[in-house]
Length: 285
Image (cartoon, rainbow, N blue to C red; front, side, top):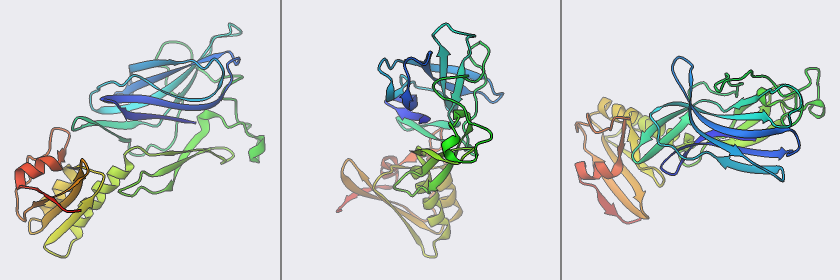
């Protein structure tokens, strides 16, 4: 149903949601968190076997791992366990995700241009191929209606059905690429935060007054793009109003302030740090 990379605990995990698993299908499931190198090589970060004796639906995540910034994906591997026929593995990959540090945690966002789940390259050693029977089934190339299609996992395509706002993540529909039936809905992790950052930068760049006001009840930091916008409008003061531990705060970056060097090595700067630099204060709700 859904395969993704998510922030988890103090690190990052691969996540798998599934349904209609048949315990007597002759296959077992393994969930991997993998890092994808620039040259396309895949490095295994974490592994979790998924055991569902009774079959049906469920959700599993790998152990959370503290990782280096980079590109990551989740991979689901189905291994033949019944001893019948060749040992053929079936792979399903998530889309690629960009992972960076964000303060004490991680920010995980879809890699630019990622819309479709593709079969994984074989990272673990044996011959790869499609299942000829069982869990994932196969899509009939001649099918013209949804009822005659078994929806191969290899053919799932994702499209945005609800754009992200600064308060809510975008909603993606996972469709069968052959019959176009919607098979699942999922959220795009951290797309709301990305929308908040984009809106903040646009507010600063487009303001026609001497002050740009940014208000949020969810987010606690800017990225380098927002600070670049501040640098391009030195005549504009930026007022930030945000919530922290149930209280409302305000910090003002004065017009003409030098904002170079405020971001950390990943390009982020928290509002609590801005409070220290520019003298923020608690305000009434």
